[in-house]
Picture 1 (cartoon, rainbow over the protein chains, first blue to last red):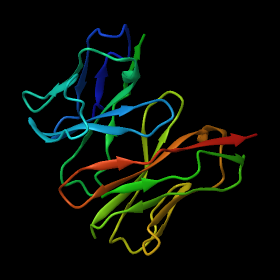
Picture 2: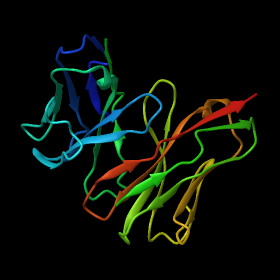
Picture 3: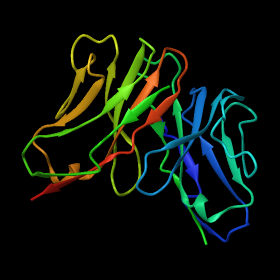
Picture 4: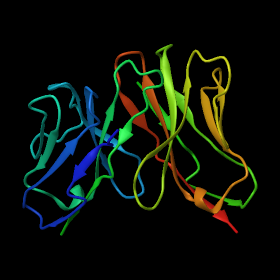
Amino acid sequence: EAGVAQSPRYKIIEKRQSVAFWCNPISGHATLYWYQQILGQGPKLLIQFQNNGVVDDSQLPKDRFSAERLKGVDSTLKIQPAKLEDSAVYLCASVRDRANTGELFFGEGSRLTVL
Amino acid sequence: AQKITQTQPGMFVQEKEAVTLDCTYDTSDPSYGLFWYKQPSSGEMIFLIYQGSYDQQNATEGRYSLNFQKARKSANLVISASQLGDSAMYFCAMREGPGTYKYIFGTGTRLKVLA
């Protein structure tokens, strides 16, 4: 089966500009996550979707970050306006509901550099 | 609240030797899952091993084993016969409860295998 797809892989923008990242989870995976991974740190959850509904967005900086999953399949994460501290890798992951182990499947990530 | 602690920022091991990466966790939920992921320099997150809180035996997957000590709330990863390709960041993660599908990650341990 195809893995989690993310694009773009790399993006360089200047502060105050906007950027959008796209994710297509594994087919049939109802739950989708966006994580932010700053260099040298562990992934930090930004938002969790179950189908097209938000389960947890408590750590999403809502003044500048937004995310949607309109049809319960692919998802977009937007940052506007970007700040220097948003430089990170944005990881998308999905999980198969009621799976025996329930491991997360990750995309390759989108690396953002804010200048 | 959930918490994952990895106290070893970096570790060295000689090729062909075994190494233990430490992970402690904190949760009040009796049902949880523990995971280890490997992140090479290329950035992808690779699932290694899973341990459920009710599993009686320690999980093993090839050269990886999980030393699960429930009373101590520890879930250490043991890599036997280290290989140069094992050099990477290793993250411990926890999922609380059935059905919540909320995952948190530790800060990671960077492992360097020496020839």
